[in-house]
Structure formats: structure tokens, C-alpha cells
Length: 361
Image 1: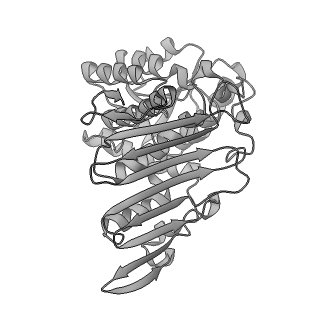
Image 2: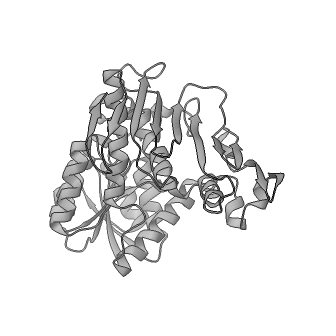
């Protein structure tokens, strides 16, 4: 059994991490840390975890093997580095860090200490994305020409984006620059992770644009990110929290077929494909695309946490890398950083080799 310490008992820390881990036979929530006495007492009662008001005390707990960092984005790097230095393996909620420089420090610390570090890109297991990936692996679409991934909402999945935090700690911190919030930090890591895990190439360039239209003067509530790959593939990732009606969630054009998925969150898996199979133009629907597990309407938070933590438990048992390696998470941060740099300069950013630096046009 893996003894876990969870730092941060907000909405994600409680529901996506602590509660999910508590339900796993592979894990035990041994300790929790938060600045709210009420949340600590609640977690002690719910999970039987030791309560800590100070991260250093939790990191010093010899019983804790794995630390989950589920605090605001601006704290991810410093807390993850401290946990690794204390000899713990680490899970960091997305985004990996506030900046690429911080992500570099985290990876370097994990390498130096010999500890495992991974990032909670749980939407790698979204059923709509898994369906798209299965189609690509079966070459139903052929070589990809364009890939459009869009998430357009109004208020977010939980009603009011700015109120997603718990009342015990600044519910609107995602709208504050001091906490490294914003929509690119919220959805960008998921969308970039999916794109990089689907496309077996490193992009040549990134062009980004961010806007702050309705929610905050400090953080973006819209972003557009375009990547061009060596094969010629153009990938457009775009998200908005200001849209009363959504565009398609996926619109993917390949040499042999085209895929479209509705933009309504509950309908992402209602995929349609028009493709040429054995010389015949054929329409495919979700029921034709795989096992029952692939036909779910959409991925719930608990389901995605279960997939992520099941993979991580096996990785810790066997010593293999987790599905989301620290190096891959750093690749995601390179793309997000390039998008921000592109927006600031008003120019396309050209990337060097995988994991390399960026250069403005």
C-alpha cells in the first residue's frame, strides 16, 4: 500500500485526489495539509489522515511515500521541490508550474534526488480523446492534415469558473495573476498533453493569443494556440469561457477521413467519421468505434482520477515510468510558455529540438 500525503484540500485536492485515493486499495491517505482547520478536521474524519497545517511537517513525516500537490498554480514548483528534497515521490496537479523555468527546476530536482515526479494530466483518459487516438492508431483517418481541438463554455463545467475554489480559501484565485491562474493554465495543459500524445512529432512553431474579455483584467479567459509540425500538420487548440454556444469539440481532417465531435460537454463522444474504407466512402458512428468502455458519454472527474492513479500505482510497483512522465510534462510547459511568449511579442515562436529552447521570429 502506498501512503499518500495530500497538500491542498480545495475542490480538486479533495474530490479528484484525496477522495479518489481513499477509494483505492493501492493507496492510503495517510496525511493531509491545509491552512483551514475546518477542512483538516473534515479530512481526518473522512480519510483517517493525520492533519498538518504546515507543508514542511507533512514532508518530514516518514510514513508518507507519495505527496500530491493540489494547491494554487503559483505554489506547485516550490512545494514539489521541497517534497522531492524530502525523499518523497510527487504528483503535481496541472499546470506543472507557473513558468517553464520552474518546471526545469522541478525536473532537475527529481533527477538529482532519484524520485518519481508526474503531473495530473488526467484528461489523457477522456473517452472522446481515447476514441480519437484509437482511430488514429488504426489509420482510419490517414495522415493528419489539420487537427482542431476546441473547448468553448460559459462559466466552466462547474457553473461559475471564478467560484470553483473552496470558500475557505479565495474562491476566485484562478482569476488572479498572483496565483498564476487563467484559462490557458486551466485547459491548456490538458489540450496540449492530448495533442502531443497523439502526434508523434515535435512542433516546429507555436503561435499564441490570449484575451481577458469577461472574467478578469488579470488573467486570460480565452486562448488560441496554433502548432505547425514537420509533416505539415496544423494543430489549433482554442478555448473560451465566454461562449454561450460551442463549436465542435474535435474537427480532424486526414488524407483518408474526417472526424467531427459535438462541442457540448456531455456529447463529446458522439463522434462522426466519414472515411474511405476499401474504396468506399463510409460513415462511422461511436457504436462502431470500439469496446463499451469507449462508448461512455463523457469522462467524469472520478473516472479520470481512477485511470490516472491506477496507472501510477502500477508504475510505483514495477518501477516503470508513469504514463505522464516529468519530461513529457515539461514538454507541455514548453508549448504553453511559447504560446505566452508569442502573445507578448506578437510573433510566432520557433522551437528547436524536442525539449530545446524557443526563439522568437
